[in-house]
Length: 76
View (spheres, rainbow, N blue to C red):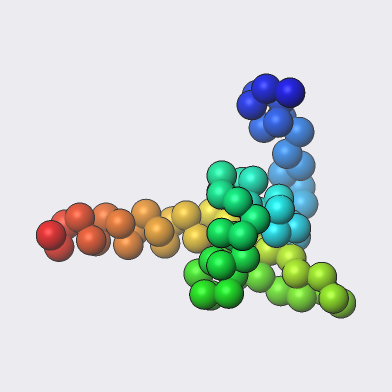
């Protein structure tokens, strides 16, 4: 399956994502995604015994990261 088919298969109506789904949307590995969650950089919640990432937390993380990168570049 090529990238276009994978992108089309993403369900944009999901409210909560698995860690794997969030990692896929961020183009990072599962371990990196868990590290972002552990550090508090990426919001997550527990549902029973399951770890879930709110779908809107992914673009919020990206926006914060972009802002931080921009500030770091302009400060240098």
